[in-house]
Image (cartoon, rainbow, N blue to C red; front, side, top):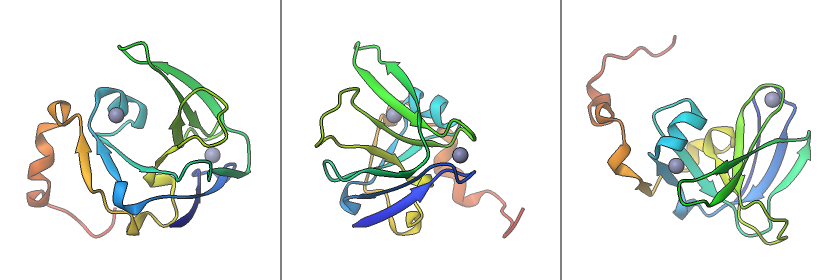
Length: 135
Ligand SMILES: [Zn+2]
Ligand SMILES: [Zn+2]
């Protein structure tokens, strides 16, 4: 599926192809911190299809407990997280796109969850919380 997206301030724009069957929710504590939210929703690109159309991303190299390194890329102007990927320059690498930055995000429905053991306990009760249509 062809998608496009960008950051909140408009500095970064990109396009890619993703597999809608592999959209994932990650509850790991790194995703909680790096997203500033309870969990992160990720869509994986088809290898080598991610292209930046405009802007230049800022990179933060994250080292996991295992020693594994991941490149976290975000807009240097507004901080919107855009993707993570391996720190090498392989032309066929996969980018883990942050679904909130994808214009077609309403059609990308999560199909599985990872790191459920660190998920926030209140998530299951969300449908019963009082809500308002706006604001
Ligand atoms: Zn921005
Ligand atoms: Zn995670």
